[in-house]
Length: 334
Ligand code: SF4
Figure 1: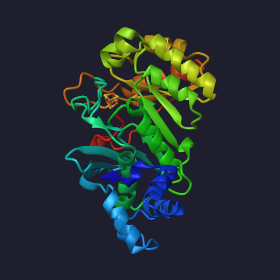
Figure 2: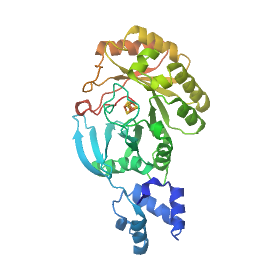
Figure 3: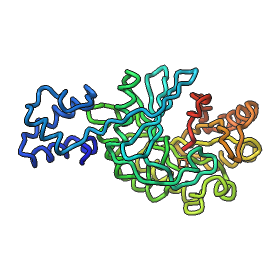
Figure 4: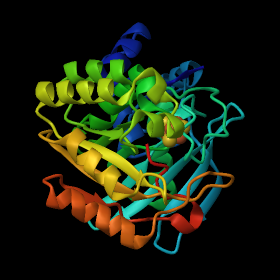
């Protein structure tokens, strides 16, 4: 059965026309789904019973069930949702002074195999559809009774490896007749899929692009992130520079600091040299120790020294606030 949340408003209008209905019904349905967050077509009370029955025959509403919910002392909530085909995905809700932010998954499993990632052991199964991405927001809003204002694609999966569905999901999130989450409040994070960065540069999206860098030499980066063998640092930097030139938007570089691995002064110097002259920001992430993982968190002293070195040499760098680390929800770094 088709998932009604896979359709943006224009596509939904076409679906309704094909069912012999007036296109304005799509806006009513959009409102029920994304503003009222209903879980049953029968709650769409301004639609005729006949139309509701038609919708039930044609579409599912893709309502996730919470399989597990963990709450951190700082209020962060990590959800495991049943995606209705026997698979499960993780979504994290974080509370900031500016509102609620959600970290969504874009795939079931991931192909990238980053060595520091908690989901590295999970084989890639499939891409999430647009509707399955968007339902993460609605399911969390229903459960936590909050309104999400920011979305980061930093959950399981490489979002640019599921490019079309992720971009369509962003279009659905943006729609002012629905969730109305502005593109500036959405961040796409990539491990560095160079061809997709060029593609994204051609789109006039206002989203933030985050690039996981994590190392300053190909040898080190390839050992942490196999994607570097396909797209080494020089190629990645070239793509990032093109992205900045085309969009005039700042890139956020993610750099997870691991003890005795990539957190010394030489690394900081090379990072300054790589990013010199780019409109960018460096997000330093105190790495989370993962089970069987080779990396441990850098010392606070080293993290601060690293940040200060970057700031003193003209690269704006901040240390990411750790949320939910007691429930392993602190960001998995891409
Ligand atoms: S860090 Fe992100 S891209 Fe890398 S393996 Fe994990 S989910 Fe995939």
